[in-house]
Image (tube, rainbow, N blue to C red):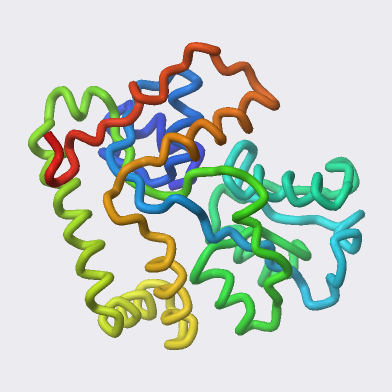
Length: 251
């Protein structure tokens, strides 16, 4: 399911959760009744991956890149990249793919010369002859992954949500403690080799925070980013879309 339609699917009861924290905040700003119950990371591993003949940022001018969609993390990171290197967004053609896996396929089928990926897709692309052009995580303040549900789900199934949150936190602890088994799972799930899987594991473990809480400074930075292109109410209260009380040990 594409990232951009997941908030509506949760609110409509078609699914119970989705994982993009930035998408959750953006949808909440638009008025959807969503709640962030876990935030896994305080930074993100997005990487600009390109054909090998892209040697400088200006080589992208007149070319086509793949992004997950408008107002997704890849969209914001790539626009921050263009701003940093003074490239007018009209000078680069972008296609919207709907998700990271589809962006990877667009790159490896040579429909585009560049895209914005996360592990394990970035390392898989390198194995196929593409290159990591630049790490983008420091160019914009954007939350990464966690667990987002609807206000109604918490209201009507709070104990189920609490158990889900506890299970996810237990699974993260297991991942930290079981490198070899975790890498094997990554290999099987994403059909990558052992080196690619181990690189993905190391990246993810490095990014994990310790308590599952959303850093409100990061979230406020993302709101400032949203305000650059859309109205965000001055009194929008982030604390109303975050519920840490369901985390283990919280009261």
